[in-house]
Structure formats: C-alpha cells, structure tokens
Length: 217
Image 1 (cartoon, rainbow, N blue to C red):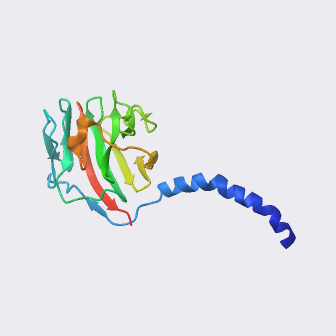
Image 2 (cartoon, rainbow, N blue to C red):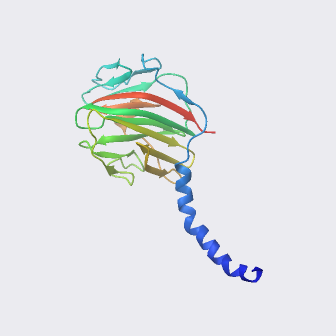
Image 3 (tube, one colour):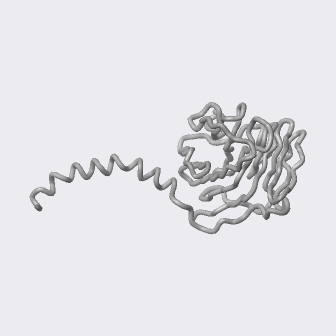
C-alpha cells in the first residue's frame, strides 16, 4: 500500500480545502467558556438606569422581568454598573414583544472601541440585523433578514463578540456572522444613549429577563 499513498495526497488536500469554511462556521457555534455573570437580579434595576431618550417611557420590574415602554419614540435601559469587556464575550438574554408592532429589542453592545446594535423586529415589525455596518443600518446591510415575531412569546438571544467577528443566535439558530476586519462598526445616532450596553424599543412595549454576560477565555 505505500506505493499508492501519493495518489491520495491531492484528494486529501482538496477535502481539507472544501471543508475549511464548514470548520470555521462550526467554531462560531462552539459553546463559550467561563462563568456567566448575571446582569439582572430579577428583582431590581440595580446597575441599570432608564436610557436618556427624549420622552422616555417608564421602566419597571414586574414578576422577574424588566418591562420597557412603549416610548414615543424610543424607550430603554442602559447599563450603569462596572465596566464590561469590549471583546471576547457573550451576551445572552430573553426578550418579548408585549405590545406594539416595531422592534422590541434593539440591543446595543461594545465591539472593541466602538458599539453596534442587534435589532429584532424593526422597520414595521419583521426586520433583523446589525446597525450599522459601513453606514448601512439593519434594513440595508448584508445581515438584514426578515422574521415574523409573535407577541407574548419569549425569544432567546445570544451575541458573541470576538476580535474577528460579531455572531448572533436567535433561539439557538445562528442568524448572523459579521466579519470585523475591513468593516466600520457603529450605532445609529438615535441609540447612542444606549451605550455602552443597553436595550431599546421603538413605540413598542417590551420585556427582558435572564440577562447574562460570559467572558470568553
């Protein structure tokens, strides 16, 4: 059999090349390491404050959830606790559209020295995407996609930020993988008040629970 080995080398190399993209995608879905830190105690708004939007709606804790809005136009909460990592972390939470027909979770998070927002249910209720990538918002860039969101239903959200990419999952489905190199990441001016970490709604009543952050080793 040693004499036949060279014939299989090109085939083996071809298989490695063909499978390389799949391996990269598999790495994006690998479980995070480290301990998840709760950012919401289920009882109070400790370490959070209502976002300084004009005409901000009330924010309350009810039955273990944070209830936001509906605002006119924006309402939300912003992190006011200790400094959080800007890369190599995962943010997880559950979000619900209670009432209204637009985005019920505009999640703003740090990305190295900048910030970005994951929009769930914007532009009339169905748009998902990152705002903004190279000056294009969630309705315009390559992360944009559409989904029908049910009212009174919890959705699980996971956002991972590494030096290479932003990845996002919805109910454990991998929905976004945005490369950072060569791309300008920022937030829309309207939600800058959500920095460094915040969740906003647009003319919509939303609810949040189980907010956690996991530092990646």
